[in-house]
Image (cartoon, rainbow, N blue to C red; front, top):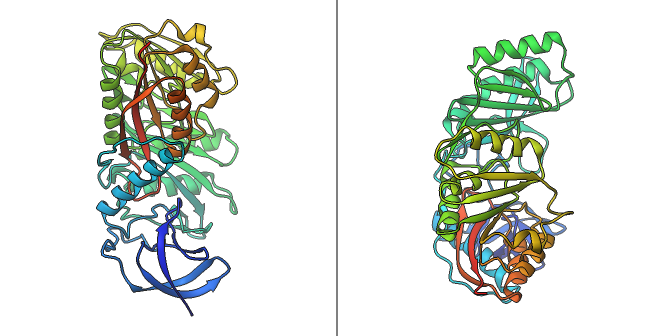
Length: 406
């Protein structure tokens, strides 16, 4: 038996003791004993608990791998996530005051990817256990919206229809304003019988749309999300913000940052999360590498009322970023890249000297790297908001206003 004291949390949420020794589901200051296996302490027992330790609100917390921090108080998680951002910024010599994170409430996730496997008696749908291929049912999940947990029987029905005996289906379920949008991947090859069976299940469970390996099998009605004054129907499986509350926090921050702008470049625009709300007051040029998402954005804009012009282009901003002469016509930009950040595009923005930038990110590390590039080019960081829409996870999102006086 080995006894250790936890010094800090790692980026994956594990407690770290001297060694280093990694211990899951622990908190700084706790004394823990268990069986040492290399760098990991197995079967840990909490000998001295932290004052920040709480009873996990979800009955699946001990086995499910979907959440990493349900054993910690909300106050601790907020402080820890703020520190993650602060440390990422400090690594590049950036110091900015950070307020309390904006936290999405329990049961607010409007989209989730469930795994499903066939069994002898039917199918089992849920999430994977921690560090395992084993699927566990999660009927009492406290993370996702109740409409999604209520959809688990539908997910299992899809597994019976389309999963192979040894394979596993990935079923993305999105709660839209007009019903559930379902996108299945990894299933059997589509044929007439499967198509008919999927149509039957869609009607039985009142699905808005169901797609199979990227192809729409049946759309009974358009799955619609309201963005500003536009109704958006995203392509199957498209990226969307995880919660409505998180989306609102990010959109309102971007709108605040770009108040008064007349011409805005929306880079890594997706389906128009920012472009469509911004178009109420500004002309927007949306740039995105996925053609289907650009088409969805354009369709939403053309069918909305009261919006200024939204132009668009399909462009890989990693390999082919907008250049300074292309950026010169904009008085503001919003940039929301994937976790890898946008080093190439940010370098061009720095040369162009766009007066205001709303920088959205899901990675504090790449956000800090790219922000440092802009600071070296003469930008000042006026504020940063931390947004925690991935509750009980180690993920952190943030949005910042950077300004440069030319």
